Length: 443
Image (cartoon, rainbow, N blue to C red; front, side, top):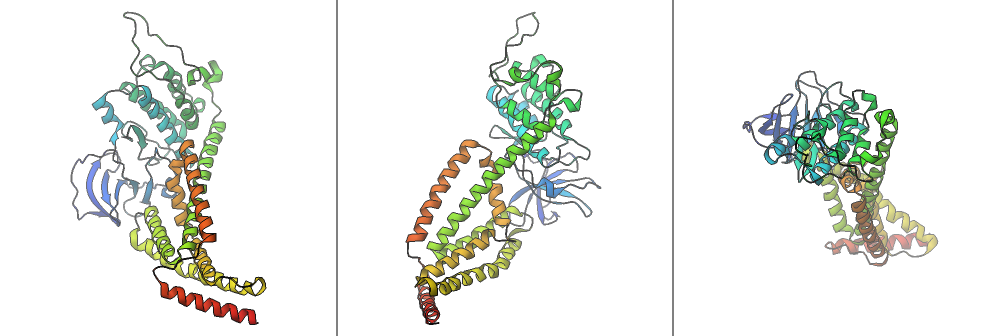
């Protein structure tokens, strides 16, 4: 998965598990192939050497726009492998070789994105282990880290040092570039991340925060001919101005940094959960207004989300899981109108179609997020996480979805439900509920 160009064709008859191999993408440990999943989606499969046991479950918990999603994997059997989302990018090594070293905003984005990627990986207790120009893809001028957590014995401090070497390579084309070859504001950050004492290196979350404030020149600074290297003063608010000097600056409170990273990710996950909840609320409101069409759309939506979250198992598994949930949802769809009809004996007559519509809404809620039915909601949260990591984007999303929920809620409370296109069913439900309410009221 370290490249998107084809280095050789693979027989279309070859398979690894449920995946049909399409082409070989690169070498490295075990090799990597582009493949098609059971649902036809492009994926990248990293084959691992004998004895490798990847922690696929924890790898799937790494959520960041700067890290390729892990979709599936096999830790047991004759050949272990990990399935990543296919990333149509170009390795950083090739990008620098073809376009030259990065500078200015491009270099700042690279430093920031790589640090954010490591922070997300470290938050799960994993480490990358092989971060470098070959495991960083450049997609729309932003880095996407691949092939993480495949090396036994790696730790977070090693990743931080690898971050420094990778950023130095992006800035100069050399991972071992001397300090004076780096932009002045970047030098203290790279030096701290490269400290010989692993305990003195900053955490990835601190690197990301500092990199977001860097003021980097668009082109390398000129050096006076025959003179010593010069260092421009750091701009106010940059990492160089805030990082303590001397022994205090060489020792970072790594525990506090981990807490910062955990807090940052927890906040983003909270926003992602809120956005997913707003989508579910809006969806249930639509079902109340359009019970038949809304339930059909809900079934399709939750099935697609299951497919997106479980590439290896594909359509058959996703549809099967949804169908198993249908009786669960149907019980609520029937129970809610019956309960409302019983309550009408105390509170007076209830509109029959409204009672049936609320039953349909209850069934839709079960399909989304009832106890034991969490896959669609969790996949929604996963999809919203990249938005939740950007404050402006999440604010706009919350406002937009909040307004949508308000409008849908008003419609669900005030509009007469439409059972289109099954008008015959609508008349049957209405007459049946009327008879039931009449019988209850007589009792």
